[in-house]
Length: 261
Ligand code: BTN
Image (cartoon, rainbow, N blue to C red; front, side):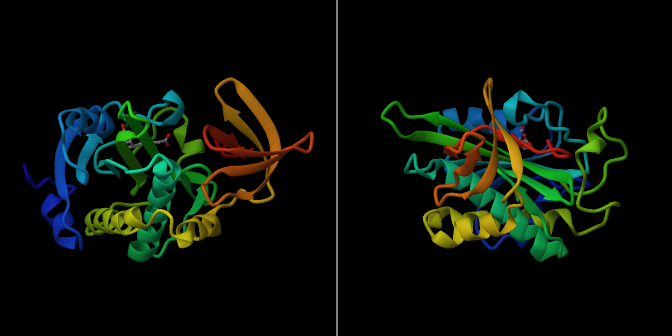
């Protein structure tokens, strides 16, 4: 199960982790979210983590593809079995905060958050987070698969015109970046996970959000709502003042800004 690979060394990730997680690493898969979902259906425990060096069909939000070239990024999924439905939005907020804190700690780079869970370096997206949940039939969660894709090194080439909107943390490959970063993200996330109601979580999230006061288009299914961002609620909803003066609390979908997707 524990294999050492050329550009992402599982033993080193484990050695850097403060916590004790059940981590697996594959050279290639279509999507770590899809594969871990299968494991969840077969009863895998909370805290199972699956990394892939390369994904052939990385899944993004809104049915998009997540470009996952080998050796350029960290692509992994975490299996959670949350206790409360209210934890849903907070889990993705905790993941965003964990990645931003880990990147600051390991590389000294400040990322900002675009609601709901894209992380930006300047005006380029460098990280996407996809949480996929299954219900237990009794109004609670059966499991939640939290997928994180972080572009660490600039890839040799980007797919299509992705370089217009996507970027990476570092322009060139370096040793000893991927593993400490992966471990720091896991440690930060599992520090926050039992403390999802701690007000400091949303404080950390808001401090990194760059949407405050901006005019955006909120997209939910076929509905488009234009408004000015007033803030982010304690539950993680985006508070939007619409053109008709109504204050909306948006809990799903995404927002679009000029120059950002
Ligand atoms: C987004 O930006 O829309 C979310 C992207 C999430 C990508 C990660 S990479 C690891 C995990 N496996 C997937 O198939 N997707 C997520």
